[in-house]
Image (cartoon, rainbow, N blue to C red; front, side):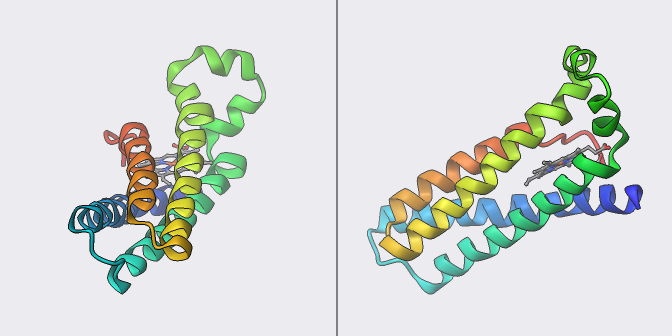
Length: 140
Ligand code: HEM
């Protein structure tokens, strides 16, 4: 189960990154062209929220139950925080990715309710900066 979910989490990163980057580019294209928000831009935002939610759900399952790294760390959080490799998953990666998922949702909501490409572009960009910075590229 652990291996399956870890592999799933590893593959889903590409969905998150590819759809997220497309959402950022389309949002900024909307800002600079000053055109109205198109159905394609709305759809990309919605797909990005789905990709992030699915990835975050798998991440939380790994975090809380399956990963030996995080569940092992819960036994001695003091020691875990002193180990940069463990702290990355227990704190930095997980926290920033959840914040990124929230930002994607805010961006998609702003785009839908206020027809505001600029706000969507800013929220999507912040979210993707977090994802690109805190994804463990060397693994999986
Ligand atoms: C939403 C964007 C996210 C991306 C792009 C992402 C990406 C990744 C990647 C590429 C790995 C390494 C996989 C491997 O070693 O094969 C990983 C590991 C991990 N992620 Fe995420 N992740 C995301 C969100 C989350 C969230 C929200 C949580 C938890 C709240 C989380 C918890 C973990 C944990 C615990 C591991 C380590 C599992 C282990 O090696 O035992 N991730 N993540």
